[in-house]
Image (cartoon, rainbow, N blue to C red):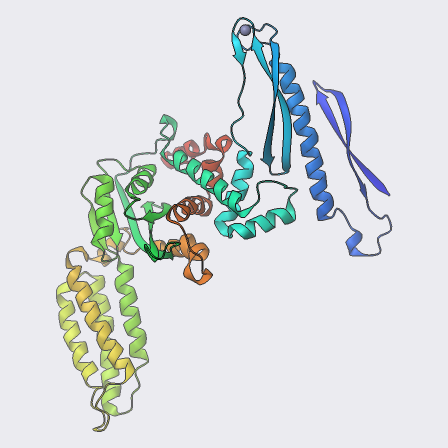
Length: 457
Ligand SMILES: [Zn+2]
């Protein structure tokens, strides 16, 4: 049995034309689950046919409407035809467009920019945010009736074009999308590394990952930081999108790296409130705790020393959490004493075993870390009590979701500076759920207004 798909064209409530699109031949006796419904090939063919018919019809009507001059409404003369080909989600279409010329007003033409529909660009870019370009190409070929614009190179280029669009959408200033001014903002920054395509120049690219927070709202961003590419604009854009103004009190949470804080200073040209990210201190202490837990106790002195170490680590944690950097040294000397008790448990084994030794090393690294960051260690306990953020575990998770899952070393991928930066813009937009609004012009209007109105209410 066959089913016939027809497309009716309805104008002002009347059917003006009817076209057969496709016949589908499927069995009426179902003896196998395979016999049920459309197959992928049918679906692809159907969508492709509808697209061809629809586009042809749209352009026919368009040509009829354009005969009249848009300025003086007189009938224009046909100049010539131009053939245009572009890619859509449902296949490549080729159309002939007439060009007209008004005797009085001159030529009139409406240019259709681009080689593919923004939606197709968006689909390709969105998939590329998650998958390698080569895989995107295979997925598209598998599911959609696409016959153009799906080589990995084209997908990459279109993704870059979308990234460009997203960048412009961020910076586009329209009175309708100015966010409410923020009194305080928190910005957490960290760095990640991805492999470079030019190992002779630099083995890795440095990826800056940031999260801006205003109350419960947050926004992540990422970009490549290098000699030739500055991310200060990126930082500025995202701070402003969260309501940063010259009078905003900006807290910057980072690891011990002064470079990251300087980037924000450069981006804002203002003073900031720098705070060492508690996350990085907590991680160090956590490592020490685990190592202490693994200490082997062969003799009684070891049992005592291990307990003393574990207790002292808890005290150290408490003191640092309360911002008491001065008492850290005391804690460290107590710990050093206990660790030393692991050294000489037998005359024959004068060397420390592995665990106490690494604890010893970590201890000194922590000491150096705290000393170097003395001025940016704060009372985290008080911060948290006041409802302020003490740690940027969010940045860590952003590094993972934005960078590692798509671009990390395990995938053996190498990245050009430009390519990585552009893909990061797309990936950020996708993961923050703002991709459609930023990449598709038709989606852009109005959405942020509603967000801001909801915030103000
Ligand atoms: Zn005219």
